[in-house]
Length: 409
RNA sequence: GUGGGUGUAGCUCAGUGGUUAGAGCACCAGGUUGUGGCCCUGGGGGCCGCGGGUUCAAUCCCCGUCACUCACCCCA
Image (cartoon, rainbow, N blue to C red; front, side):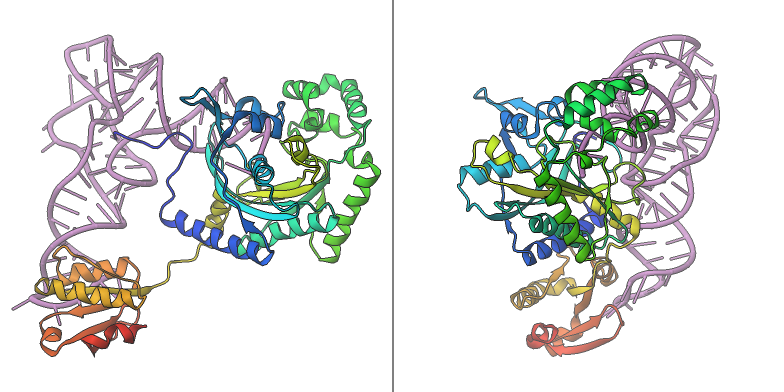
């Protein structure tokens, strides 16, 4: 094969594209019910936006960026996530301080691809600016839950944590981790230097054991952070949203400052199980040069969600709709005319222009999921009619040519 | 970036150091001179991933490379 798709990218076809359509359609409808409006930002941004936005010490910035220099010598990056970009757009366009936005589109991370993880992957996300009440956090979480539900995900759970650590927490944690240094894995020792909190979500059993007695961030929240977190939990409880507190939810990006959450599923195996995740980031707008505006949001991975729907077998089968015209080759122009009449009525209609046997044309009508086959042969032309065959029941009746399109409407 | 597995038809996969490399599904045609799905018959399709080596002879053995895949790391 002469040309192949790039590593870690995919072509979405067939059953996949059906799942995607289902997801995008459901998500948009829920987002609109919640009053969020679409924002589209460029796929490319300045490299420095993400270095500052996501955090210099994160893996994304350290080793996963798709960056390059353009012909003008600018340092460019294909966005690895959208939050920093949406914040940039929010500032640059001086959007209303209170803005509820959503986006969808491709993100890029230079990683080794594996199940449920790609170099180009698609996210749908929501970001809410200018509201620091626990109600907004609860809303964002419920929005995420409703999207997963309406897409048809049957089993998922919600994990919650807060990263509103008080001033002394980092030192406290570091000194504890130093005391158990001997039983930490190599990568945790590195994390100890640059992002000690991420030691808490290491999956290595030894590290887990060692970190089990670590001071919990939820015991060391700022007073405001603790009150806010309690508020979120209360709201979720009274809305009957089930969740589990999980102190190991620390997120891979540095900008989170408050309640964080992950919706996970077991359906894709123990890895790559996060479907939708996000949290509060109250200082990002300011640190990217905007006003001191609080914000919270989430992103969901369409690729993974589509995979879940396929595993569950809940990708709905294509519905039979529209009409396929089956005709004797002599009457191709007449068939062409009929096509236009159908389309003018808004009816999905198609035909094969290459001369083919009736049998082959009917097969095409069948595999193309058309509800009706409209037959134009000698008899119909002689009587100025068209035969309408219902492809599901097999029943067939004749109708005057001119009113056929209206009849199917 | 590290480690394992796999590369044969559009897809899923058999197979053998030695003639024209197979199956199922899909596709196309015929069985039905104007009717799909089921059935029957036939047909088209393959640099056996790429490069090198061993050999009289390699799809098969060896080395390299690329790709896919699974896992680690990390994440959606």
